[in-house]
Structures are given as C-alpha cells and as structure tokens.
Figure (cartoon, rainbow, N blue to C red):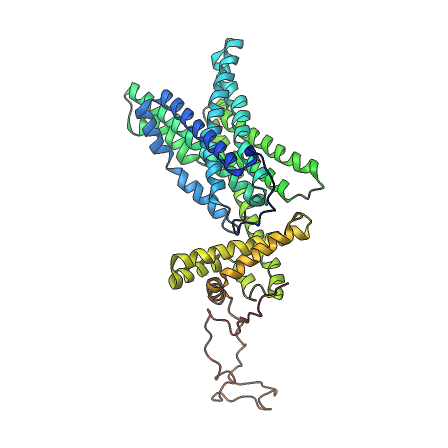
Length: 455
C-alpha cells in the first residue's frame, strides 16, 4: 500500500459538482457520522447508559492490540491512515447498523412466519447473521479495492483492510453484548467471576478477539489475490473475492452454530477449527510479507544501475531490521523530522519496487512512467537524510565475512607456501597483521553514489 508521494494529476478537465473529491469525502463522512449516531442510540437503548459505558470500557481493550498487529503486518509498504480510519469507522458504524437492523428484521419475520421464536433465533444466528454481517463488512473492502486501487496491491493489503474493518465491527458488537450482560447482572445481583459480564468478557475479548477479523480476512485474501491477477482474467478477478466471501460466511456460521453442538461444542470448534485456521492464516500473511521484502531486494538493483540508489540500499530496504535501525539513526542525528523523512524514503522505495514488478507483469497501467518518475523524484529529494541512515543500517546489519582458516602451529607437513619444512610453532602467522574483525563493519562497503540518471 503506497503512501508516498502523491501522484501527479492529469490535466484539468471540467467536472460536475458531484464528481469533485470534496463532495465525495463530505458525503462519506456524513454517512458514517449518521450511522454512528444511530448505532449509538440503538446500543444505548438496549443496554442502558450504565451498561453502555461498561461495555464501551471493556470492548475498547483489544482494539489497540488488533490495530497494532495489522499495522505491523503492513510495515513493508504501509498504507495511508485514512484508509484504515475509513475501514474501522465503516465496520463500527455502517456495517454494525446494517447488521443490527437486518438481523432483527429477519429474525422477527422468521419467528412470525414459523411461530417458533427459539428456532428463529437459532436460524438467525447461524444463517442470517453470517450472510448479513460478512456482506456488510466486505462492502468496505470492495470500496477500498475500487476507489483506492493504488493502495490495494496484494494479499497483505487485503488482510489489513479486512481485518481493520472487522475490528471496528467487533468493537461495536462487544459493546452491545457486554452492556447487555452487565444489565443482566444488575437484575440478578451477580458480580465477580461468576457474573455474566465476566463470562462474556472471557469468551469475546480474551478467547476470541480475532474471531471477526479471522472471518473477514478470508474476504480480504480473495480481493488481494484478485489484485495480483492480470487484467485479462476478468472472471477470476470477479470470482476470487466472491469465493473468499463465501468462505468467510461459512466459517462465521460454524462459529455461531458451535453452541448447538452440545455442552462442549464451542470449545471443540475453537480448538479443532478456529485456532488452526488462525495459525494457518498468520503463517500465510507473514510468508507473504517476507516475499514482499524479497521483491524489494530483487527489483531495486535496477535503480542502482541507473544511479537513483546506492549499492547498499536494496539490501537495507529489504530488511525490516535495517529499516528500523535507519529510522533510529535518523532520529538520533536529525530528530523526528529526520526519522519521518527516512520512513517516507523507505515507503517510496518500496512503492517503486512493487510498481516495477507490476510493470514487468503487465499490471502497472498506462501511467507507469509518470508514477515511477514521481516516486524517484521523491527519493532524490529525501536522499540527504535517508542515505547516511541507510548506509549505517546496512553496515550494522551486514553479515560478517567468513574468517580465514587458520594454519596449524606445525605448518604444512609436506611442504607448502611457507617452506618445505612448514612453520615453526613460534613462527609469526601470516594473518598477524590483519586488524581484528568487527562483526558490525564489513571489510568492504561499496558506498559510491554514481549520481542520478536524468533522462
């Protein structure tokens, strides 16, 4: 997900008022704000003011951890915060409102039609809720995929967008469940570990904070694979997100229906299905992130030959540890502005690498040259602060060279380069004049900027 720099705009053309960006942003913000107010009123009506405050205080606890986890996954090519804010707001406001209204309406209609309220609740939880909720959350992923296409380039981007959307949805849903549980405890007089609030908190916040993100991440993976497909495979690009959405609905339905599998059905589904799925998806995302770093190391040497980058930068930019050391070095020597400049440099260089990879695969678009030039110009303007920091990081993280194999004290028994009778035990070693090896400084560091290529 690229953030730096802003791409050059096309020549000015006459546009209608509804096509202007500030009108679209205003309409979107208004929609989310109204959805937030309505969902706030609905949740407060069901939980009461005190229950709402208790639910809010408990539901907010896992949110920073989940956001930090998804942001960590996106560190190779971090996307703009505005996309994540939109996704979280959509999940917490718009998707939650759609789910509450649609689920309540469908459950009442089924109960009225079948005269079986208990069966209607079970059917609503296992069939209606997964379809409605996953579709509402997938709408945010679809909007980012369509309208922020340059920020949506692969599987990791899909996972991050979907996960943050689901985190917002789970936040609002946890307020409702925890607030309702607190109201039940107020009526029954229960408190402490034996209370319904404590049990709800343990199940939803401690055991399964990743449940909703895990479901929706499947949809995000479908969109991410579609983003990697070439423009010729239109059917594949349409079917992959749909397949991910159907998998998300199926996993959600299995999770909601686990209570109907007996007394230990929930724990059986949790241990046999949810935990392995979470581990598998985590491995997939981390493996994909490592492949992204490999792409950076493989694509940037072309810009070294052209003179835009120094020879050590592909190695430094392809290592998360080296990137972190470079930002720390810049912070010590140039303050916070220097660290931000290095972070922007890293983001632009990563965007150039991914853009070049898409260009080789025929997926870069007609404006490839303009976008590439804009990113390279941004790198050139930031080089004064970023290059010394990356140079230091490359030297600090470079693997030490292999040490020479020492000669035995008796030399070569059958002759050799030091005489027919070998070396005496007290003979000076031919390596005695070599300086002691510093594991943080390689013996040769090819920092020789050739100067930019100006076409």
